[in-house]
Amino acid sequence: MTHLRGLDGEAVASLFLHALPDVSLMVFTPELRVESVAGSVPTCDGLGTSEIEGTFAWETLPPAHWSVCEPLFRAALQGESSSVEIQWVGHGRWHVVGVEPLRDPEGAISAGLCFWREVTERKRLVEELEQRGRLMDLAHDAIIVREPVASAVAYWNREATAMYGYSAEEAQGRITHDLLATRFPASREAVDQALLEGGRWEGELSHLRSDGRRILVSSRQALVRGDRGEPLAVIELNADITEAKRAEEKLRAAEERFRRLIESAPDAMVIVNQDGLIELVNAQAEQLFKYPQTELIGRPVELLLPTRFRERHNGHREGFVAHPRTRPMGVGMDLLARRKDGSEFAVEISLSPLRTESGLLVSAAIRDISLQLLHQLEQALVPRIKIDPRWRLAWRYHPAVRSMLLGGDFIGACERPDGSLALLIGDVAGHGVAAAGTGATLRAAWLGAAQGDVPLEAIPLLLHRLLTNQADHRASTMATACLAEVDGEARELRLIRAGHDAPLLITPGAITGLNGDHGPALGLGKPHDWPLQRLPLPDEGAIMLFTDGLTERRVTPASVRRFDDLAPHLEADKLLAQPPGEAIDELLAQMFPGGTEQLDDDVAVILLNLARTGSADTRAGSADTRAGASADPPA
Image (cartoon, one colour):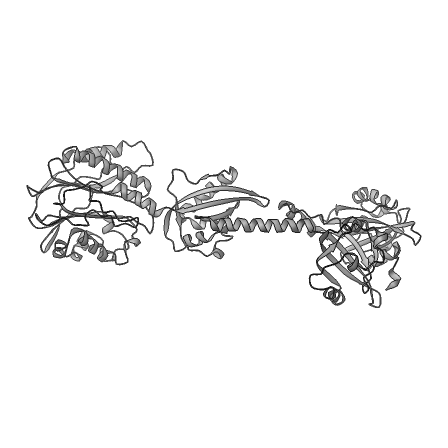
């Protein structure tokens, strides 16, 4: 279509009148009188096209628009091209208003062309990109008009000159694909085919500037047809997105490095946005919480907490977002997390804020400390002092690994100065590290008293006062306890119970609960009397002390809830025939066929075989816990 070569301003306006449907046009004379209009030009009082043509521009455009556009109109008549963004008064829509001079064949300015292009959606995109730091100046597009077949340049605006470095005179008549060394996403033929079939094509092109620098452009093209449907021209609106693409590539590379860093972390990592929604987790987090990544992304982080803590955590999270800083989470608190199957476990969590262009992110490094904590508790709550092997003694302590509702069971064994064996078993009210700490304190106080030759009947009051005088408001203040002393020479059992289950006396063919007078639990109100029982011991038999985790947990068989139910399940002769450690292990296997890992409460058992002769149980005092077994004899 060679007649487009040397296209003048009027011809350009004519093409625009048939061009992109979201572009509105106005051609104006040097006197600022409206010559022709196409599209939805913003006018005063909704004037129609026939009412606009022939009027002055300031009579047509709303005053707020004219005050912005007048300098552009007058500048166009002086040969300058310019554009500005305007919000359409009363409609809330944004437009780019561009004004170009139109020249006659001799090059003199004969008129001006003003076009409006709605950019409301692009405005939204720009705002989003600004938030991410990848602002693309979409308001200044290069406008190129070319022949649809030969692709020779017919019109080249100022922005095209700025973008590519070629003046309009240099570009005029040149083949665009040769001039700009265009690289197409597929092929030139594919672009031409899309224009012929659909009238439009949008995509990214690689162009070469006059200085040899290659740029990437976002190109929007439309085919203009004549009245008979013949192709007249192709209009291109091109925007340089080179820097934006580089920024995106850098961002993607940074995100990939960040993901690799998160994946390489030894701890479970959960990245949460300022609204508390999970944005990223690593493989360690998937393994720890038993959730696939797809079930975590976009979900509230409270999903990973026990239900009873979720509402309270919302406030803690909002407080952190208001004052973010790197710190451990929940200092002084017992932190529990929840797996997909509902099981709970103790954790340590470190929080780190990360400010990004899209907002605040919080990185949580989560470490499962269940085994570590249980091992520490086992060290604090179980015996550790050597005992003469003549005492055929064993004990077992199993923490509640499944729920991590840390209990306060505590046990102790030691030899008094007179050679008798002192035994202790108890249970602090409540759960958690505070309860376990109280249990460890009571055991330590009892051990000091027993080895310090404090009379047995004086020890309950000592422990009671220790509970009632605690200054820490978080500490547990009530506990049950069973204190026993076994005199092997006199064959006597001295027993004091403070609200605790009665121990069992096991003799050949019989198991008897040593129910007798007892006092209340320790820590209840004023001091009380805790009666001392003196019971003769048989030459052949055993004594078993235990906590309520043996009989009152829901994983215990339904028929076993109290001693009265438990006794029929015990075989006295088998318990007496086996070494104490093996006897306890077999009993627990019978009571908890699914394994002690499923316990909802901790369990402690002490078994003393009263036989006068026989070697010591080689497993006496071993701690059968998930935190690891200890071979030390009990204290």
